[in-house]
Image (cartoon, rainbow, N blue to C red; front, side, top):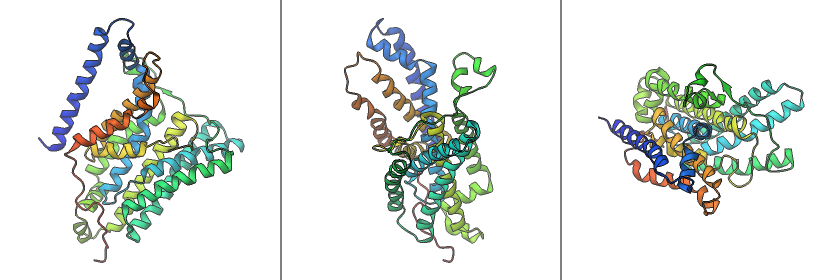
Length: 356
């Protein structure tokens, strides 16, 4: 069995064991105790639905990072792409709403605007790191830091506050009959369209990378760029495509999080994105650059993010809310410690000139 297969099996068994422990714990917990309240908060369809919603920006960030790094470009600026797309989607919606555009048309147009802004930022990043061979880690950090400054500033200029006014969201799309299936129906088939997009984009990304000409070129660009160049395919062009696809997917994640769930942009602190791009990076390292298992990593982090919000609502737990807030990042540290088997693309971070 491959390293990826063993890792997937190991974590799959851990997830099954955790779910089993929840069900057993619910029956063993004393009636009316804090323990029973915790189990009751977790074993609900609303909690499972919240996990799927929270996983949207993390999952799309992971998919975007996979395409960029599989092509050989280190992209730790995906947090910045999420921030820029989150803000621009809100700005676009307000502009369209004031122009009298209908809510549905305004939402989808604003969603596309958020993606375009993310792609534009990815294009700037790509030019610096591919054409001008800038240090990829520093360029990625620059994208993130610039977005943290520019986004709140733009919000302050347009809305007189670093936090935007509330906007409409996509709501949920209910699929008849399937939504009535006990247990999984309300979770999987009465969800935000952004959740459906993530569940579709994940296997599509896997198929593109594994079974299409574009995917093979992207993987070759990150593993053996000289061989790709010898075959007559431009490594530079392939890496541009990988980074731009990263921008598209991160744009979906940022705009989808704002318009599909939050309903506003928060510019204070780390903004409303709040580190979800970095969680996406850990998710694809957790998944060993496989979109399917990376989605599992995104769901893992989203589950703890949703958990800490629910734990804060249990008044009997005399624990500072800030301590609950760091729970997802404690999980990140543990996961990074246990990963071990992640195989980086052989030419990741290495500049390549087609004329060499």
